[in-house]
Length: 575
Image 1 (cartoon, helix red, strand yellow):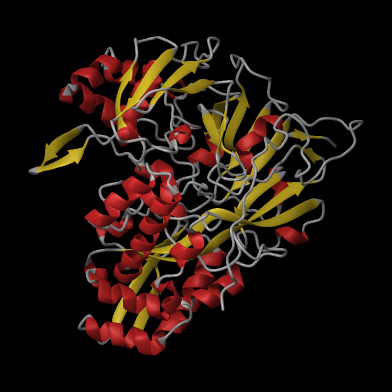
Image 2 (image 1 turned 90 degrees about the horizontal axis):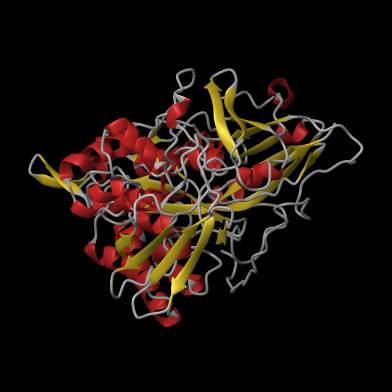
């Protein structure tokens, strides 16, 4: 039986962003010599400078570049947005319609010498609003390949004088987006001046105001693919930094090298050089690559806990491990999706891969996840979770066979894709294969290096095993915005192509109506629909392993989309 649920209210602290926090995993004497470079390994690929595209959202861009492209907020360790006043301020303006006044720091300037401006906010909104489309083969499609339009689609306009340091963001009447502080956050603000230089569009703000499709197509084409990061082939002129670090180089054998940004106006980074190692580096011998901090899914480094000189912490995260199911092919009908869900041993998977020592009895990490749209420590989670999820706890061969019959099938083969190498996900697939075989459901492991969740839409696989919104590595927030976006029609992160107009309405209302009674009713209604139609199968809060070398200071675990590198500019290594 799953643990009982109760409400947990947690307060947000700054967690000593500029000093050694109580949560730091290691520290040593001030008498030791400071080392000028620190290695940081993550369990995802780094393929783009733009974390906001569909591909960027599931990559390690946010985990790697949060202190290269900061925003008005960042996701703190509790999963809530925290103001980053080095970039600027955002103040709600009184009135009937939600209006927010943004002011960039007067000293803010990119590493190439070009000042930050409200043009950058306009570009972000234009790209993520879903407003700008073009006809392709008789169908209107978005120009920008944005992972999510949630929040930005609620904005009516941005008042911006090109080149200015201030902007007024006016939301649509009745669209009071409750999580507005999460907008224009870390990695969201891309350098608009690079777009103008590379596309020949002289004024992004004017193009957005006029809705000039020809000019916006040029802007979108660059925004979608112009910031690709390819080891050994970087054009750093495309990659100006607005944070304490800038990209210096990127090679397969040298990692992604970040160095102190000489034009940064805030506190100087405590360490001048951080080397970020993406998925694929050999983590069984951390000292070989001078890696002092590791943030990966538990099991991603089989023997990291046995390496002398490192402290390892295992913590449940805001990322929900889940199967994302396709809506075509074998899973075209909901009965087939329910058949698969019936044989997935969710309870035993949680016991094997989701339990942490000292886990809470309620909240994040406490048990199976039974709500796709509500966080496990939210006020309404217990009621939202008390729906049909109870029918899909243990593998039920009889129920799976019955659902197969409802689908008109005797057998079924399911190809499950995930980003490899990943020993935990490989073992999850193995256990599901064993549990489903007696029901006549064959499971094939389709994990591979470089796997892209868009493979699901192309029919290359039938299901994706990943975290929140399809991310392979660190993911998730307390507000569940990414999770909700991934189930809304036409969002890039909706990899399964799920469509339900009522779920779209519920997502929109959950994001704009803070009333607890409304949140409760909407969440319960949504989960009843989702457990019946089964676009995803939620499992458990992904467990993260954070390993920190002796001599490290100021490392604070952040089990969210920001990952542990959220405050890397405060890290110090002494030996």
